[in-house]
Image (cartoon, rainbow, N blue to C red; front, side, top):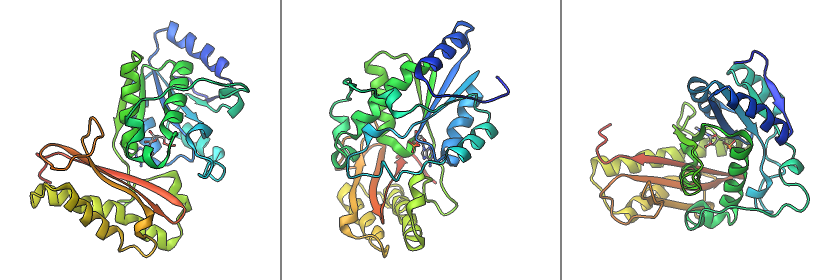
Length: 293
Ligand code: AMP
């Protein structure tokens, strides 16, 4: 597409630009992010680049998905570096709205995917997925994408957005993209920046515990979810900076409904959320019962 990256702050202006592309039947791909871009985000951008004529990356730290006690203010904001990464990976448009252009004074409207939003992270972050669903729907309305790209790292978010799109007849393809990890297995995350050295060492235990659990299911034929969760917890607690109270949840869930399962007879996702220092880290692994290795 165009050679020079376009940075647009105004939702209306962006919508006008997109209308023009749509009238020329260009395929639009959207990658919603909160910035502090890393290789996980770039993998989404690369996929979007391959499948679309126009690639839009939105960078917006969305206040409505943070609770008052959470890290909205300290969340890393690194636009200069983000812009370079976007240019390097062939992004056409960065959408960089100000908070008051998305939520002007007197803003009132929210969408919510019921039930699914109260499970897992939703239990510990009330209102989080309502904020997520609302901003994503707004981004969809502004950018009118053919396809939107989401990381499977935020598995619950991916399922909720798929449901939103289906329930509201959005006619947007929702693509789930694989989790990109550091060499030692830690899932890449903008929040990894919060980790000190000890915490960074401990953080790898999330992935290690998930791999162990997966192997127990596949090779030791363990079917009891509670046994699995105990094993995961044991591994997590090996971390100097991880105590029982740091673990928000460890869950073995049905990949489609997000409901917890007790006996593992079919595919499951094993998901967890753990505070390592200030960083609330999430990770998951999809266990296909037919997997061998
Ligand atoms: P965020 O900026 O954290 O809101 O993430 C924006 C998008 O990037 C979401 O769809 C995330 O799931 C995705 N993402 C974040 N980290 C990763 C990762 N390590 N691998 C793949 N996708 C990711």
